[in-house]
Image 1 (tube, one colour):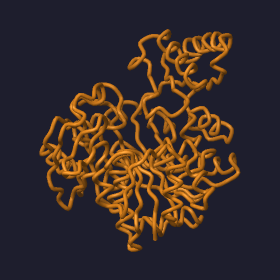
Image 2 (spheres, one colour):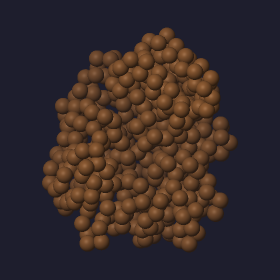
Image 3 (cartoon, helix red, strand yellow):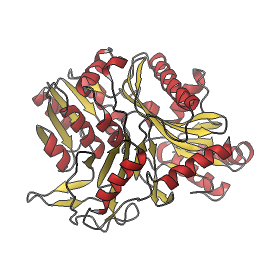
Image 4 (tube, one colour):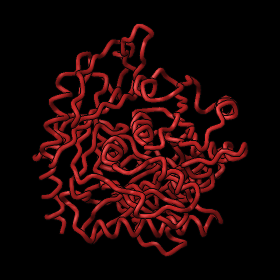
Length: 449
């Protein structure tokens, strides 16, 4: 058994570790842009290459002849790497380009749900123009101003309608102070990619539900809550995610059983809608970013892959054969009996350079990690292993440290203790997984409802 793993971050270190635990003892052939110490330790062979250079990836695949591929990051999925690999006879645990539009285009996702009668979206408007036509931009500007002011009454979200590393969404009252600033950002989006989505701003608490999907076969994973803001107390700029937690019951403390059931239903309805719309089955990971609001659940966005950090919480709990799950996704034989997760809580805290995300002054400086006990995991992200074994910081998130326990509180204490022992010019969000922050979420939902 040989598996090609296309990688970019700590998410793929977690994927590689889960694949390596399989009783099938697979050879893992990893490709990433950096000398990731986690991938290098787990993979049978590691290639350092640009994962967006498809001819280079295909050359490696042709030489290695894997049984299948797992594509981790959004950019190669969105650009059609699964299609390219299938063109040389290699199936992937990742959707094809047409199906990956559920992530690469916010407008496609909203219109898909609307067309197929899936009631989960806020009020929205998707605008698409030729950005080279000055007259089209002028008309769009008027349309945007009218919609933000009259329809959304100044409480809005502007979404860049293409991949932008999780940083293309701006909210009124947080990133944008006036309607004019909202219009300005929306026009900037149109000039860059020709598409923008305007949405009603929702009040509630966000969470993630990821599912293994093969066509209309959908098996859910434990629910996770991410923390996008850079600093304590949910302040500062958005990031790729500073940390996450799961609960032992696979739900979250602020969710009702009806909330969770509805999120699961939405993933099933969306998988079926994608198959109907695109004429072929979605095969891979469907990641629903949801928000619990006053009267139920709404969809914020869909992603077409494992989340990072979400994968770091979920995959250590997977007690069944991940390779068998991947094979079943590809073969259309996915079933509940193949997927088991331990009933434990996890808390992930990301170690980042001290200046992240605003500056990269610490890039290239050394960082050292403590030994991980059996109830913890260390997953390496933007970090380089030198030939002498030293670990040097990149400019982005360095490594996720995950504590595993019977309760969130126990898991948090494990993660916190290990994070405190990391040496170097780094930081982490201490409040993630702590009772005070979770109680704040619970209180907000109680007040809303």
